[in-house]
Image (cartoon, rainbow, N blue to C red):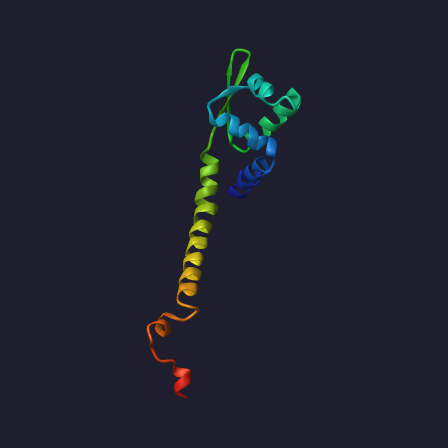
Length: 125
């Protein structure tokens, strides 16, 4: 599967509130499918299983079978990858832009040269 396909599967998985809720439940530790179904009474077992399948295909859930039980484990590595590729760089960009805006506001919209009392070449013409 290509990186773009993996990203598409990941964003699809994160795009549904029920799947995000399942991931929140798994943050506290692995849970059986039965426990997840009990925690999500608004959904039938088949629907929970479908959501788990989407999460598994995206690499967010790892399944371990113990006898008749299916234990679901959170794998947060794909989310970390999203943070590294998208969130971190965009957050840094936004912080830099906000810093520049703040500096601009604090200097009254003047360039650093004008704020320090430097000459304005256009006024000397």
